Length: 318
Image 1 (cartoon, rainbow, N blue to C red):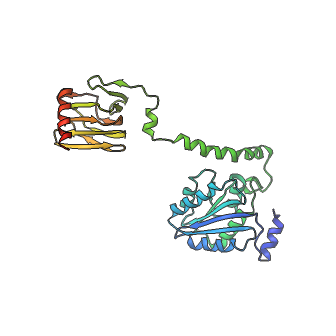
Image 2 (cartoon, helix red, strand yellow):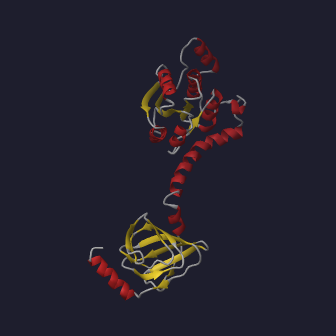
Image 3 (spheres, rainbow, N blue to C red):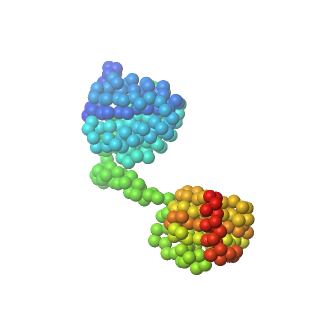
C-alpha cells in the first residue's frame, strides 16, 4: 500500500494512485451515467484494476445487479467491489445493500470515502451524479481505492485506532456477515404466518373440521383453519368481515347476493354484515379474518342441507 507522500507525488505528476488488484463492477441510472462514465475511464488508467461497466438501468435494477455480483464474489480473489451512481447516490446503494456481505455507502467527500473504508470495510462506492463534480468524484474514488480497512481516517483523528477499537473492528466483519444470515432466517414467511406458529386453536363446535384462535378483541381478528372436505352451512353475522386466505382452497357462496367466489392462497374477500353465505373447503385451508365488534354467528341451515346444496351447485358446474 502506498504512503501518503507517494500518493501526493503521484497526483502532482499526473499519474494514477497505486491500487490493489481489484475487479470492480460499475453501473448507474440515467442521472448518474455521466459521472459513472468519467469514473470508469479513470479506473481504466489505474494499474491492477479490472473494471466491468454494466451500463445504465433503472436505479433499483442496477443497484440490485451490482449488489448481487459483489455478494456472490465475497471472499474470492481478486477482491471484487462495486461502483454505483444515481441522482443522489442513495437509491442505488439501498438496493445494493439488500445482499449479504455488501457494504455500500454514499460518499460526497474524500473524508466520507476514507471513513467508510476504514470503519465499515465498504465494498461498494456510491456517488451522486447531481451534486458531485466529476473531478471531486475522482478524488473520492481514489481515496476509496487506496484506503485499507482499519486504517487511520478522519474519524480516528487521522491516527491509528486505539487497541479497543482495533479489537472491535477485527471482529466486526464476521459479525456483519452473520447479521445478513440471521436476518434472512428471521423474515422467512409473512408476519401472519409467524403469528400462527405455536398457536393453540379451539374447535368451532357448530362446524366440524374447523378451528379458530381469536388474537385480538374489538375490532376482532382471528386465525382460522378448516380441514379439506369441511363445510360451513349457510349462516350470517351482525358484522362485516375481511378475509385473507393464507393457504388452501375454498369456495364461498353468498346466497344473499347470489354470487360465488373461488378463493386460493393470497385471495381477499369482504362479506357485508347480514349476508347469508355457505362455504366448502377443497383443501386444508387457513385464513386470517377481521371484523368489527364481538364474535357471533347465526345458522340459516343445517349441515345436511348445506352439503346437498353445495353438491347440486358443483354438479351444475357453478
